[in-house]
Length: 400
Image (cartoon, rainbow, N blue to C red; front, top):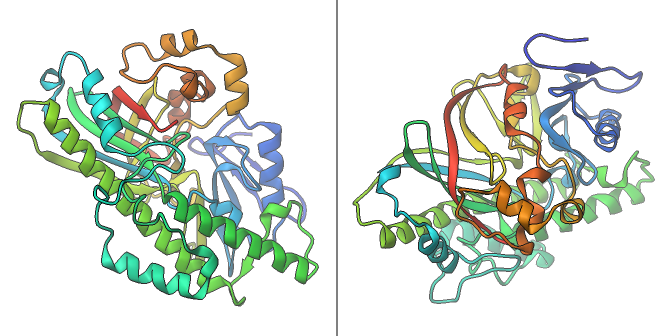
């Protein structure tokens, strides 16, 4: 059965909330995770929302919007708290870029610390805002287990996995810088710490769940406000992290591009792994976007493809059926392990032809073939967003 717009199906199961799905392509494991979520009593009655880039995650699917009343599921928010995107348009045209982008890529790779655990040297780290440091001290004074000695040294660093820095061209041949990262080690620690607290609470009160990773913190529990404070800090840190990286990338570009240039438009600095209090259908709810971005009417957002596909700058339509949300990217169609077994370095080179990037075994799991078609993902959500710009990357830095 088809519904208005591009919502593909609504699944109704006795005793559960509805599941609203914006794609025909949902793997069995992801569908089971959606059904598990829909059984929880504090899920909003509008139901669980499944974006067109959906795939299985830990406890909850990636590409899901979860609105809850008086409870939050820490594992649904995840451990890469505040992970998201930043993009700016520059006053440069494609013709202003060097014929070879190899030296520029290497400059960015030197100037922005990459990889798991990557951090600045003491003398090169950007200054972390005093307000962030003060809030962090308050959090760690109450929860000593959340102290991370690298919190200052990891500001302005990329991380690993699917995090990236790209230089792109839009349909007008304007140059954009786009990057993807989150709250790094501190956010990871906060996520894991409160996931375990939620699990212990379920054990303490003998609460049985369809999946142990759906352990939740009720709003009236001792840990709830501490979790909200810590998550908000991590989300703000992620925002600053992307801002600091963007400054470093633009500085690197100035070293290799002789033409003077300015930022002509910052598209958005947005999260796609986060939780926030919002009002929908007249109800005040905690909205967790796990691999989704907010798309209220007029909101600008960024939906990246893989490093061999297109990316999109979009404007939200404010579709309440999705809690004013849209997808966060192309979404994986195979695991990292499966990608390494399926593809070769020769495949990687072919699929990233024309893109200045690493083309070796270390980034093989990020090959475009491991991701869904971004064009199909976009076609499935025309009732959620309008396309403002189409971007094609010409340079990509990965943090493998």
